[in-house]
Image (tube, rainbow, N blue to C red; front, side, top):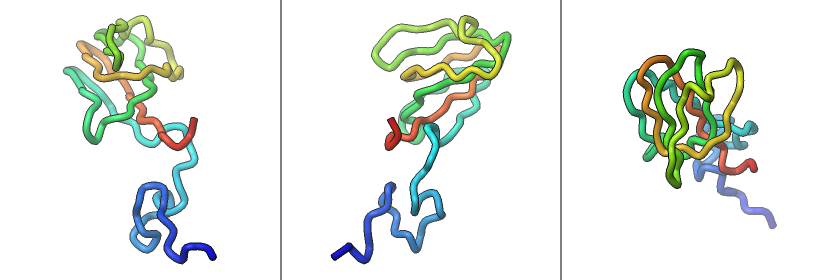
Length: 106
């Protein structure tokens, strides 16, 4: 017999969840974080960044989660998602759109 109250993907009862929480998020990315000048660290509610879109003329560095950095200027191309596991980005000028991955979709 099926459970009358199945656990939803994010452990919200369907009666308290919106449709995405009740049925799941269908896409590869769940959320975008706009990163302007300064350093944005991807821990806590920002954990799980697995892609970035870098605006043209952006200067700074992307720090990979297991070490090393990549200059943002080398990633600055229009409409390209760069799939990287990031711990943080430091933006001197420009904008980075960090994308939080949907961990249920591989």
